[in-house]
Structure formats: structure tokens, C-alpha cells
Amino acid sequence: RDYAHILAVDIGASSGRVMLGRWDGSHIALEEVHRFANGMLERDGHLVWDVNRLWREIQTGVRRYATWENQALLVSIGIDTWAVDYALLDERGALIGDPYAYRDPRNEGIAELVDAIIPPEELYERTGLQRLPFNTLYQLYAERDGSRLAAAATLLLMPDLFHFWLTGTRVAEYTNATTTMVLDARQRAWAIDLLERLGLPTHILPPLIMPGSRLGPLLPEVQNAVGLHRPIEVIAVGTHDTASAVAGIPGLDAHSAYISSGTWSLVGVERTEPLISAEARQLNVTNEGGVYGAIRLLKNVSGLWLLQECQRRWNEEGRRLTWDDIIAQAEAAPPLRSLIDPDAPEFLAVGDMPARIRDYCRRTGQSVPETVGEIARCCLESLALRYQQVIEALERLTGQPITTVRIVGGGSQNTLLCQLTADACRRTVVAGPTESTALGNILVQAITMGYFPDLTTARQVAAASAPQRVYTPREGAAQ
Ligand code: LFR
Image 1: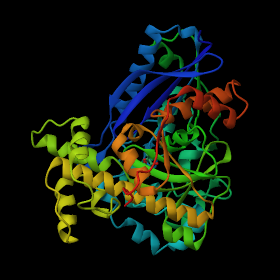
Image 2: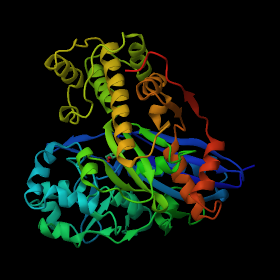
Image 3: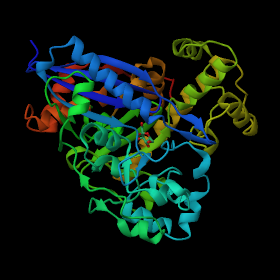
Image 4: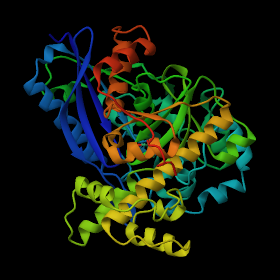
């Protein structure tokens, strides 16, 4: 018998979902209430997110729950999304334009302009953040002379925008704020001076709040619109999806690395303090804030994006390939024919990914993958090899041996990728939960609601609640 219901809204770059967590006193059973596609749109020459549609999808999910569940059990709702992107609001709270998507080409060359004003060493020392061309600070600098920024009263990251629409509060949740490159990693407070030095407005930053905070009840008009009979509480979870994904990993200890595998592969370890050093900067590892004071020391590795973008291209050519078709063809393709650096800059942008992969292989004197299976195999093997490099770099950097690799997220269902990862890393892979992000989102809400005393206990519940699968490295398959 259910004792309490908690809703998690989890929106990634390629899909979103509203998940129900049923707490029965010993397990949390997850159920998908609503799933919807997400993706960047091209408008006025820019790649943007359709946040109005996402907002409708969130409400559709909650409304669906309200009609088919015993809503008297619902205690709270929490939201997480991808990071770095932001909405600008005017004085009246109206949205100024469509939020830009982080892959929008307008960010090209901006980091280099910022370098001339704030030396990269200093920026790393302050923020502990990896240099990615789309960090919020760079995105803001890219639009420094634009009319949007001039009209802006408030900047809200994506989950903060939905929090605003749900509750009317304008705040910045800490885990996601750490991805902006405007946060002092050690003080865990806004580094306003960085904006000042770049001539960017500072009044647009809302107050920071910590994950686990109560944001208040749903606005009455939202509550009515979604058909809920009571004012349900909105809780700020680790609103950065990767923060929630890592919160939801069972058994995550000092000897484990994780790979949060979706559009991106976030490869890292969990620590208690930021690790900021010259070596860390050269490796371009990031110190992102997690829930309850944890720090995620990790690297962004291009993830299933490579294949998602190939799939888009192939289907534009009329091939009608499902994801399972692509993986099955990769499985059947000959191993280790060609490898790419998945993080080469040309793979970041939207475009003809199969052609870019072929060009890369031709340029580097390798055999050129032509078929769907060959290209997909090349992507998956290249990812596995990159995971191995990053995990060993993290091991050297922290001096902490890593024996287990925990893969969570959608990619944990990809048995080929999990096995290739075990082979390449020569370490045991534990795959699952697939929905660790929704689970981590729900665990934080459950802690705030008093069902668990702390994250350690909550993660034990996660372990008992979700299936996991073990992969051991195959002899002789190591790359
Ligand atoms: C994963 C993720 C990564 C972030 C990237 C862009 O969904 O949130 O952590 O670097 O998307 O926001």
C-alpha cells in the first residue's frame, strides 16, 4: 500500500518525463506518468528551447496524475533539467524571447574574448568549472550588447523558470547555479565581480537557495489548471539533472566512478570539497555542486548525442531507423575499425554527424566507416575508450583508486555500450537505475518531507528499489 506520492519532472535535452514515486515505507516504486520529446528549434537564426511547450507538458503530466491517482497521497513536486541555459524576464516577470540553447553557434569564440579580460587560470581558480564554450558566463557575454539583456530584470535557469511559473518565486537553486561560471566554488556564493569585470548586469542574479528547500505551494491558478484539490508543495531538488542523477546512484562510494549517460556522458567521482589545481585545470575537470554539500568532480564527455544526431540525419535521408535498429547494427559490425575523439569540437554542433565522423576518420588515416552499423560502432567504442581515459585521469588526479564504474541514465540500458565500457575500462560496470535522475529528484524531496534522515539512507532505499546489472570485462577485449 502506498503511503505517499512524490512527482519528479525531469527534462533533458532530448526528452522529458513526469515520474511518480510511490513510497510504501520500504521502497520507492517509479512509474512514468508522461513522457515527451524535447529538442532545439531554429528561430530567427538561433537554436532555442520552446519553454512554453515544456511548461504545457509539465502541466499535462501533473494533470494526468491528478486524474488517475489518489491525489490525496501527493505530497510534493520537484523539477530538474539540463544546465547552463537561462531565461531572461522583464520587470513584470514576462519572458524575454526564447531561451537560447547551449549548442547555438553564437558562443563560438566567446571564451577567448573573455580570456582577454579575466585570465582563464583565475576563472578556474574562482569557479572550479571546466571550460565549455556554452557556460552561462560565456553565453551572457555573447549577448552583452543585445536588447534582451538590456531589458532583463531577472535571469532564471531552466528549472528556476518553471519554479517561478509554478510558485511565483524567483530564486536560483545552487546545484544548477554552479554550472554558470558565476559562482565561487569554495564560498558557494555568487561571484558578482566576474560579471562586473565583463560589464554584464549583476542585478539579474536572483538569491541562491540550497537543494532541499521548500519553495511554497503551487500558485492557485496552476493548482486549478492541473486539477489538484490541494495546494501541493514545490521543493527545489538538485535541479541540475546531473546533480539528481548522482544523488540517485545506489552504492556510490569512494572507489566508484559514475557515468551519467544520456545526451551527454558525465564521467566523474563524488567528493566533499572542490579540487582546484593546475593539474585539474589542464585536465579541464569541473567541480559542480551536488546535493547536501557534495561536489561532483567530473568531465563532460560527448554522449549519445553523437548517435542521436546521426539518427536524425539518417532519418532525414528517409531511412526510418529506430534506436534499437542502430544498436543492433552496431553490435553486428566488426570491432575496432576506426575511432574518433568524441569531444573534438566539430562534434558539438548540430549538423551532418555521419559525414563529420567519416571526415574525421579519413583525416586521421583510419578506415572510413560507411554503414549505419560501422558508424554507430565507431561512436560507441570511441565513447568507451574516452571513459577509460577520463576515469584513469580522475584516479591519478585524486589519488583514489576506482574499482567500479556505475552507469546510470538512459545509456545504462544500452548493453553494448555497458559491455564495451567494462572492456575498455577493465573494471566492473554496474548499470542502472535507468531513471536515477527521477529517483535522485524524489529522494531529495523525500528527505525534505522527513521520510529519510539523510542521503545515505535514501540511497539504500534507491538500491532496494531499482534493478541493476553487472558487466565484467571480457578477457582479451580490452582496447
Ligand atoms: C546533462 C547536462 C550536463 C550539462 C549539459 C548542458 O543533461 O545537464 O550536466 O553540462 O547537460 O546543460
